[in-house]
Length: 370
Ligand SMILES: *Cc1c(COP(=O)(O)O)cnc(C)c1O
Image 1: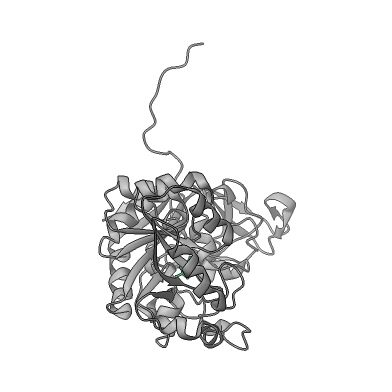
Image 2 (image 1 turned 135 degrees about the vertical axis):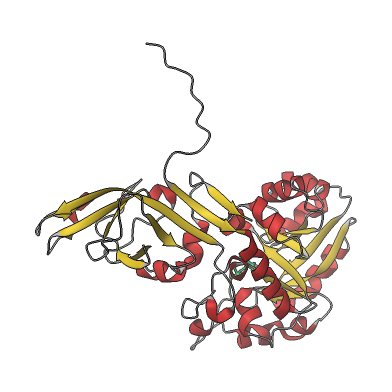
């Protein structure tokens, strides 16, 4: 039997993430307000925290630069008309990155001696570098005491232009601060004079921008707050005057009326204690909704919270709508977003909102709300 050629233009599954461009713009203005006249890098790694790099390029037009991890992102941003600065937060990964770095005019972090070796051995036109300083997080960077030497080494390489120093805070969120061995003040103390080099230090992430005005420097790197999510799950977006830009929604595609004692989903994890109305929602772990989510995790439908029941499947999940008679076939269920803070949902399974929004699967269509 011959199959008929059909074209399916829209993904037929009833799930989408709405991206609110006005919210992204509002959040950028908000961070700009706090950052003052410092250079504002908009961090767009992980596909702009799941919001779509192209949307970020468009919405963050007033930022001074984009910061990301991947040269492919830099190429995409340039292709979409981004003419301002671009910075690779983890630096380049291989010698083969050096030519595209220069072709695309992308600045790079230098965090390790092997990167300096590559710069020495490759003929350069111009590579703009930022020296990464390890001020106590012990992830990337040179110790503050090494920075002088590293700077001399770099400046001695023809074609290398040293732009400044960068460091990163491990605990700039108020609720992380208690007794943190690497608190902001301890990291600043380790930076010493480097943190005061007004000309060329870039230290603050969203949390430090929001809660640590004592962090100086001439540039900041704003990530999660630009997407409307609080870096600290104990402080709401509203309190910070930022607006969640991603709302993940899926429709109810089936309803089961079940008796007490019946069980729901793989592994029969959840058991009904009363006659229950169970809605099947077209969102699963292959969409980025964590399988580790426990019974009772919040979802939002028809203006009320409905608890998750049973294990999340690959393409579906179930919620208890017994107490929400308005919920019906076709009702949109919000998994996180404007009405349901991603941090609150994340907390239910022991993670942070960052992870949920970044892990939104590629198969979920983004609907752009201008
Ligand atoms: C991701 C990242 C940021 C942005 O952090 P937020 O908490 O999202 O603001 C800043 N700097 C570096 C080095 C990063 O990797």
